Picture 1 (cartoon, rainbow, N blue to C red):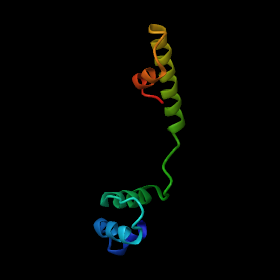
Picture 2 (cartoon, helix red, strand yellow; picture 1 turned 180 degrees about the vertical axis):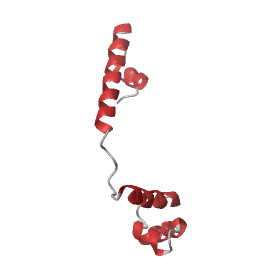
Picture 3 (tube, one colour; picture 1 turned 60 degrees about the vertical axis):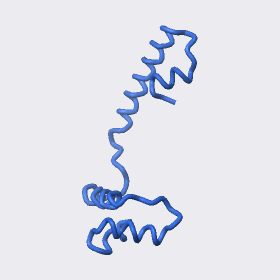
Picture 4 (cartoon, rainbow, N blue to C red; picture 1 turned 135 degrees about the vertical axis):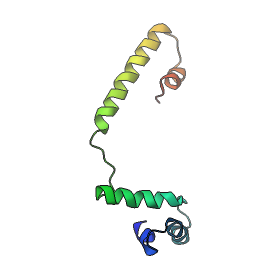
Length: 91
């Protein structure tokens, strides 16, 4: 992706066209995706997403969901799991 982007000095539309030509069976990406990937590489010197704080946020979300589920089941003990999942926003 970065190679396609660099072929014409950062022309994301040309990079997209080259991508489609080279990988016709792959997902067709929008032109901005090429710019975003290259910018992320410039900013972070890696393709890997920054994950240093994700565990903490995930734990907090899980605890909040647990509390909401317990409160909701206490209010309505016969609630279906599908309805409960939809209301709380979890699978």
